[in-house]
Structure formats: structure tokens, C-alpha cells
Amino acid sequence: MIEELVPRTVACAEAFEDTVGDGGEDGLFPGEREALGDAVERRRREFTTVRACAREAMTGLGVPPAPVLPGVRNIPLWPAGVVGSMTHCDGYRAAALARASDAVTVGIDAEPDGPLPHGVLESIALPRELDWARAGSGGGAVHRDRLLFSAKECVYKAWFPMMRTELDFEDAEITFTPASGTGPAQPSGGAFHARILRPARNASGQHVGAFEGRWAAGRGLLVTAIVLPAPGGAVRGR
Ligand SMILES: CC(C)(COP(=O)(O)OP(=O)(O)OC[C@H]1O[C@@H](n2cnc3c(N)ncnc32)[C@H](O)[C@@H]1OP(=O)(O)O)[C@@H](O)C(=O)NCCC(=O)NCCS
Image 1: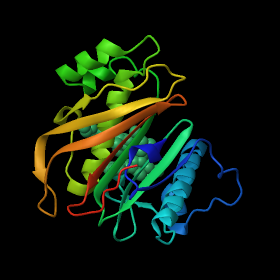
Image 2: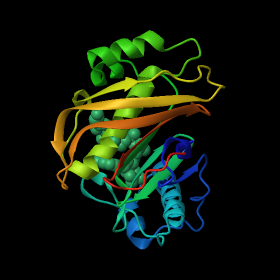
Image 3: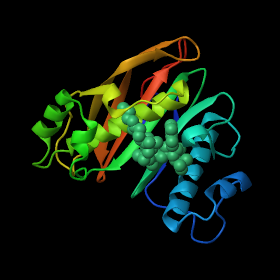
């Protein structure tokens, strides 16, 4: 799913089930095993499988497999010259990586295509987002409240590693373009625009005031992705 949402310069890997973590060889690097500590089984599985995805994406990018350790605020630490993002939810794990010469930052997020818990939408949505989310959910359409949530998580994952400053839910306003399909059995997707209400400059002096993202729905999942192209980088569409 994720591959359809990003330019060809982004190497992706995804898994719909855990192929590692059954007590055998976990494929982790020693530092990763240390970072994982005595985490519960569920965490061990998502951590391990998403890192297998990351390694597959590194190979796709032509980068030797390397550990992915948590950095400040748990950002994934990538090999030098690489940017990327990882996500995991029930039934899905994915990694998306790019060379820093092609992308300034990448953010991806996946969520189950189900309603948010009661009260969450009101705590994450701006007024116009709230109207949009309430207008279209139900009747077999994707769960707009969850899609909005995923897009905001995606924005944060693209924002934080690049800016190293917090971004709250009310600091980004998301506008979705119409979906190409509506039923849960019929994959659908589209694009979204994230306007940053607290724009800032990144370490390279680039003004970051918006992100363009894409989303897909299918297999009971909602997946969102943002790739901010590097100035002068190779951006090739799918
Ligand atoms: C960090 C956060 C975005 C993770 O999202 P999530 O849906 O809970 O979890 P996902 O499974 O999709 O992603 C987890 C992965 O995100 C990555 N991640 C964690 N913290 C991160 C951060 N600060 N920046 C970027 N990526 C981060 C990690 O790779 C993590 O996987 P790992 O722990 O196995 O290494 C979320 O927990 C959070 O803190 N959200 C609040 C901030 C926010 O969303 N603001 C909205 C701004 S509009």
C-alpha cells in the first residue's frame, strides 16, 4: 500500500503479518535488542518486524543493512545520508526511506480503518476538520476521523525529525481531496494538504509551512505518507 503513495526515489517495505519474533532468530542488531529491553510480546513483534521492513528498504535504497535505534523523542536514527519513517498498527508494519539528496523528510502512518475512540476527534480536530470528518463517515466510506488522525500523525513524523520542535494537533490543518472510491472492499485513496499554522525554518534554512501528502485505504487499513522533496532532488512520481 505504502509504495503507491510515494515517489520512486523512496524505498518502501511493508508486512501484513509478523514473520519474525516466534522465539527463533529475530534479526535484530545487538543495540536494537538492548533498546527493546524486556518489552511485552506485542511490542517485540512490531519492533522486530518493522525493522525487518527498514532493512529491506535500506537494501532497496542501496544502503547496507544497519541498526535503527531510537533517538531523541524516539525518532528512528537512520544511517548517514538517509531519511525515513516507520509505522506499525494491528496487521500492518511499514518503513519508507529516501536518500537525503532526494528528500528532506519522510513521514508515514498506518491506522486501522475504524472509528476513533469517543472524544478523540474533538481533541485533535480544528473546526473545519471537524465538519469534514463528521460530514462523510459511515455508509461504507472510510472513517474520516481516523484518516484525519493518521494524517496528523504523519505530519508529526515528517516534522519532528527535521525541526526537533513539537507540533500539536491544532498546529496543522488538513484538507483532503475527494477519495476515488468509497467502499471498504474497494481500495480508495487520495491526497491531502497539511497547512502548518506555526511555520518555521529547518536546519537548512528552508521555510516549512505546508506538506503535501497522500493516503490509501484498503485491507481494513488507512495509510498516509508525506515526502518533502529536497531542493533540486530527483522527484519521480509513481
Ligand atoms: C510519535 C507518534 C507520532 C507515533 O505514532 P503512532 O501512531 O503512535 O505509532 P506508529 O506505530 O505509527 O509509529 C511508531 C514509530 O514512529 C517513529 N517515531 C516515534 N517517535 C517519533 C517522533 N518523535 N518523530 C518521528 N517518528 C517517531 C518510531 O520509528 C516508531 O517506531 P519504533 O518505536 O518501533 O521505532 C505518536 O505517538 C505521537 O507522539 N503523537 C503526538 C504528536 C502528534 O501527532 N502531533 C500532531 C501534529 S499535527
